[in-house]
Length: 195
View 1 (spheres, rainbow, N blue to C red):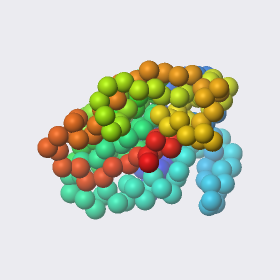
View 2 (view 1 turned 120 degrees about the vertical axis):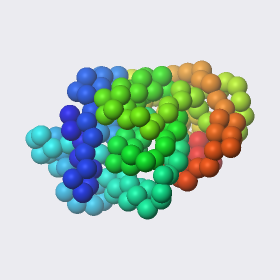
View 3 (view 1 turned 180 degrees about the vertical axis):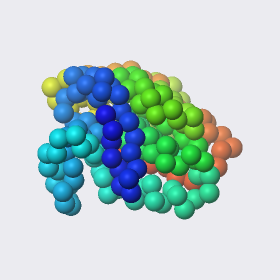
C-alpha cells in the first residue's frame, strides 16, 4: 500500500501490516486507505487507490522543517506505526530514535521500517518518563480504539480505566538513553502523558 505525503513523497506500508492494525485496533489507523484530504480541516473523501495520512498538514510541516537542519537527530516519542518515523525515508542524512512501548505497535513499526529499507532509525520498546523502571500503559480494549489512544496518563476524564487493559511496560528517561547525544527535534504524541 503506497501512502502519499506531499510534494510527490510516498512510503510503502505492507498490506498485512495495515490489515493487522485494523483487525487488532479498529479503524483508527494513522494511514488512511482509499481516501484523500479534500480540504482543511481534515475533510477526507473516498478515492479508490489513493492513500494518505492522519495529521497531513502537521506531518508535512514537520518534513519541511527537518529539511532545513543539517543531519538532524530526531526523537519520536509515541511512534506507533511510524507516521513520523517513516519520514526518515525523505531525510536520508537524519538519525532517528523512535520510542513505542505498546508491543503490537512496536512490532508493526519495525515491519514498516524494514519494508521501507530504513537504516537511519533505531527503535526502543520502552515508554519515556521521569524515572527508570516499570509502569503501566492503559490500552483501550479492542472495541474502544485500541492502539491509537494508549496512554500512561491516569487523569480522570483523560482515560476511563474500565475501558482499558492495563499493560506493564518498561520506562526510562530520555537523558539516560541518549546521554551525550545532541537532539535537534523531539516529536511527542503520547495521548496526555506529555505534561
